[in-house]
Image (cartoon, rainbow, N blue to C red; front, side):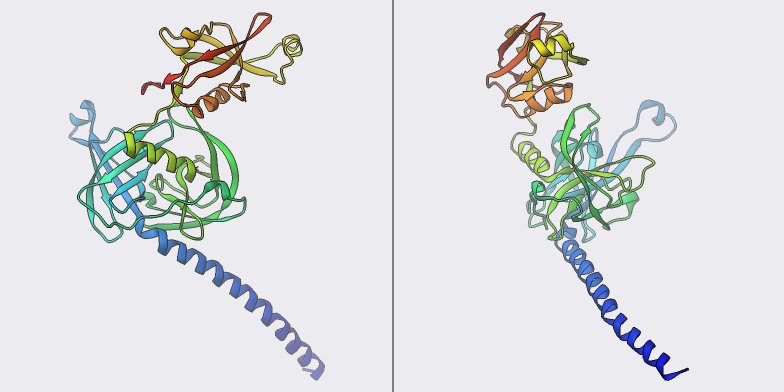
Length: 343
């Protein structure tokens, strides 16, 4: 080898070394961030096992119970656990598995299928490790997030990813809308439901709730601000109170002439298909065939907009509902009642 070649290789090696060191340092910083977050939040993550009596046809075959499993996170030292409604709904028996190996019984304090959230209370326990809530409005696309849970029964599994998108909407099994859902590519599998999505400080920024079947890296979490508000309501009263008008509506296009005449910045609205007897809508004079175009300060271009407006409004407080009826545009004052559990 010529001396000039040797010197060239030495120079190349020296110039590459700092780059390798920088990359190794960045990787180590990433690892340390994940490790510290898991150390803070991990002890509060639990497995949630449930059992319910099997239907008669299965009991005749010798199967007495149906079992399911998911995840949860302890949010207070005295044993309140936040999880998904679909993990525990309909259960006859619930067991919580702690990170220290203990298995404790638990009971449902409150269940809100409209947000797919439930709060449990662990039996006979105090001074439990708990995780803090972060502010989901501070999340940014591209931010590091960490999912902790029990996918497929593998306890305390950690996966990492980033916030892929913000402001998504997700419909629960009841058909109601959850707003500002966090999309992430942190890998989730069956059993992760109810486990926390945390930031690099170990604070809960979301509650993992859904994946898109057949997709890769498209997962969703209920934002922490929603989860915190619902959990508070469930702990305080055992339920979440939501405003209810008492109409069935359908998305319809707005006739261009009507839109121009009434100066509507809408191409669609909600047509009232039915007004339920004895409801706030009936008392306020809303009629079948009315086009609902605004509720409060929210323009109503779809049933989701109507639900969004009601979700922000206090039960029993006056609410202005603008409707187009024939050639007239009217504003009616409605006093919403509480959404029935069956709705």
